[in-house]
Length: 145
Image 1: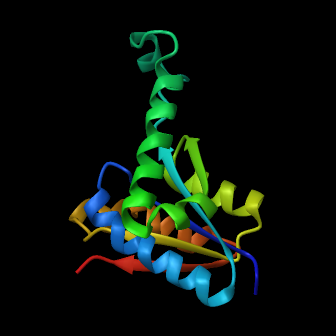
Image 2: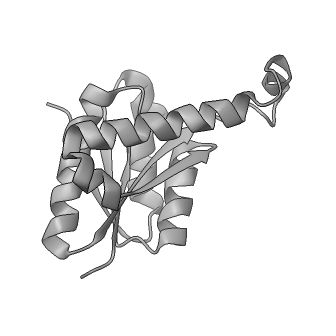
Image 3: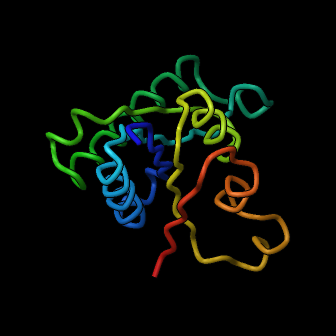
């Protein structure tokens, strides 16, 4: 295949996301694909909420997220593997940004974790299910045990 595997991670839950990342790396290696990892930050800047944060807050948050993402990949896959991984930090709604990056990257596969559903997820739909429904490429969902 030799394409792109995009792995969407929630860096605030590194223990939960490590199995997702390991599976994405395994799938990328099987196909000789490049592994891209991403995380999504909330968009505080376009709403009234953004006015409560100091100028430069988002840039600092983005920098810290990039570091956390890199640290998670290095801890889970090792430094050598981390050096060959493309890291992406996006801002906005999780499922919209995952789909946007997948399209921009030309991803052949999206790997995303799924939390155990709570009642509200059955009504609203979690990010993983939205990615599955709207993706133009295959999606591999890693369920937690």
